[in-house]
Length: 251
Ligand SMILES: NC(=O)c1ccc[n+]([C@@H]2O[C@H](COP(=O)([O-])OP(=O)(O)OC[C@H]3O[C@@H](n4cnc5c(N)ncnc54)[C@H](OP(=O)(O)O)[C@@H]3O)[C@@H](O)[C@H]2O)c1
Image (cartoon, rainbow, N blue to C red; front, top):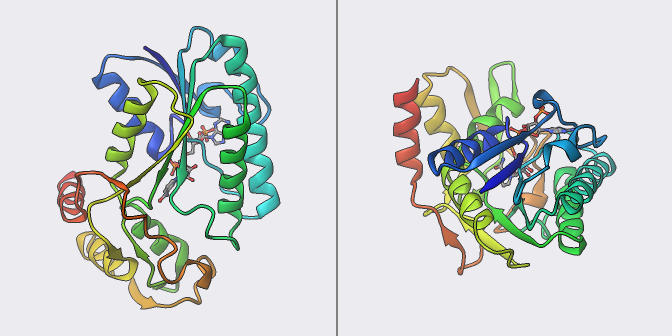
């Protein structure tokens, strides 16, 4: 199949592109660095010519709710208009487990808008909601470190390997549009402070950890079980231990 990946150069996008190559699909990369700007629509119509399915794994660094909503509104609309013109049969969008439950966060507001437009738009769709990625611990440490101390919130989550997310996205894109939402998590629940400690040990980092809800990034809207998936969630096979061993070997 000829499959386009919106956000092909990002963390998830690179894994999706690898899986598409492994399965001998014809890939089209959509990203500003690949000559396509989905915020303005520049180059999208040309890029989607002959494409049968699109996987949307775009992201933005906007944290303001209005700015994040504006990003996902514009990019989803440009993608859908060009997809209809090109006869694309399936749009698969990556979203986040429990995106409805976290209200006081700009990124989640943007993702809700993206889901809404995907579900109400003209292109047959499927949505994959994933839990946080294993990489999330190291990202949170980077976001919250000041003067050698990382204020990491004690989030409860059931994180998943990006490689497993990419496998499921490609499986969905090569199948029929279901107009439904699938949830994907990793095999086990974890606490973000413990994950961060183990990642810092693996990196031999001198950063000190301070468990805290006063971190400037994640407030109490993420406390409790709002990040945990439902019991009927599909689970990826990779454990955090396995991911740590693989990441350590890659260093
Ligand atoms: N992090 C998690 O734990 C988690 C969990 C569940 C779901 N997700 C979702 O996963 C998605 C992907 O995240 P990620 O970490 O892979 O993102 P990322 O690494 O930041 O990659 C973002 C991608 O979007 C592209 N992009 C940004 N603006 C663009 C524009 N105007 N036009 C075209 N392309 C543009 C970037 O390429 P250029 O810069 O070259 O344009 C890049 O390829 C996000 O939507 C996020 O909500 C994340």
